[in-house]
Image (cartoon, rainbow, N blue to C red; front, top):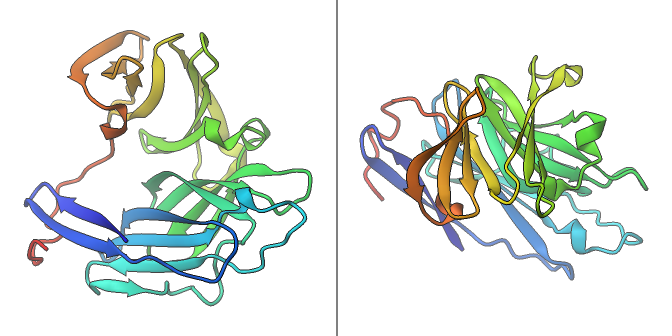
Length: 260
């Protein structure tokens, strides 16, 4: 069992959410992926839990028939339940959803790995609508779809869904930034620019409101890259896994909640 903390810095309130373990008679390893977002209609913070057989460990000749277990925690209900669209809409058992995620346009988006088509495994985007609580899939451009999933991450930049394509070969360390110009239109993906920091780049942490890229370097330093290409230090050094950049809007969410 693990714990998720929902924290509103505007009013300094928090809610601790216990994520229960899920046990099932299965000979293959299981994987649990979480997602977080705020419903744009009810303004109710929600945590989504997806538990599926880790298909990466299942031999190709074996078919896993069970679809993933999906549950939703909402602050207003205070507990876990099946999503509204549970009976008609769950991810396919042959899709592996990764932890790379972003909440954008009222939905949580993850990078996923699709194994449904034999001999043509590819990367896609899986989304979960926070209003209707249903899943959807979104194709990626061929260049990204054919990438190794470990080289991809999802983000958002200046109001556009964004994909990060890494090349972390030693001595090359670079990141290619792609944006979806028109949300929901697969043909609107466009390659924007490539940032190259050979021997230095560790990962992209996120984007500032003006579009500047925030990076974590191999020396544990946090920097940002201006539109001119200049790299500026933020004077912050820490464990790379502790860095996070996300959009933020002041609100009174959790105002009626006791810290728990």
